[in-house]
Length: 488
Image (tube, rainbow, N blue to C red):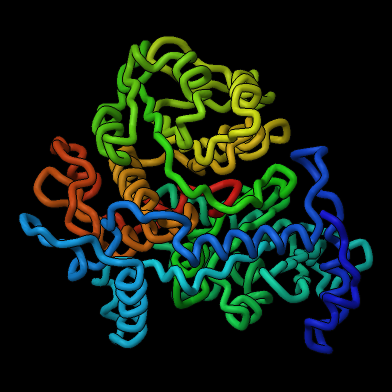
């Protein structure tokens, strides 16, 4: 990333924050880690944001099925109603937003909605800086530099001092709470969720609100990529509900081109039975339910081979690939890690073949419905999903921890319904998080249904039902699924 003049950022900040803004914005140097490619300049970033915003606000092409709409605007079954116009859709989302702000807390009952006209993306650069010059408190040994690049106007920087040990301790405790499905105690300002939010976002939050930012492309240092941003809380709401966001290890790896005008086809590949590994009985249902049959091709078990992923996905007809299987990420780089097809494991080094095959026509999205596919090491940042970005995909979806298979299958089905409705990727994940956290994804007999009452996953056995009958609002179920790369 090219540095911008310090005085430009300082002019956008208050007098009291001028020194912090100068320091933070001047820290926008070529990024560490993932790539030797040159990162975009600030004008290039803003042009990319502007192009994306213009296309999203205008509709970005014809909308698909409207399963994300409030129920009162959905066409009635058995009646010959025309699909709602874009104007009606915008009116519906605006009306839902107004009701949600004025109903005294009853908005949890409203289906999530997307206000296309309010779409306002920005880039947020977050990095650690060693405190060589000293800090205000003896226990603090680092600075967190946070820089916002809005769609228009000057970048704004903020600097926060912190203790790296305390930050790591809070992150470990938050992961412990999530893995045990405990309460995150968000009413307590001393809770890890609240403390991490304060250090990462509190200083820049007034700017986000003032600029009416809706969507963030977060470029984060390697030490921050394991933070479950969606589970951080400001005392009123989770960050993942308040903002649509994606994460990238490097803006040099991230396409700032506007979203595709056409959805293309989806390749849905997965395996449910393995030699020496536990079965994944919900994979067939997940592949059946994700996206629309008319725009989808499936490869299950023995039909899911390495060539399926690396050769069939190379066909430019496919713009999205969804993979549901076991994954194993081991230290030592791509050669040490693998996805399990229905025949033999696929080493991650094979992803370079996909990059070569998709030159000039990159995949729009690769989703990994498997455990810990968004965590990596020093050799492979952001794991499988990060390697998908390096393989040329515009965006990837991965997971931060060992996920529950019932909830995760339902999550991806609902996410694709939003995507098929023409919702941008980061917003599709945000709406899905909102549906889960508000209790709108619920168990009915042996089925999980979504906020519109439509089936997500059915035929659950009694053991699977018991795992989710207490509700899916805990962030364990929805905060660990993360979008990487382009947010739109």
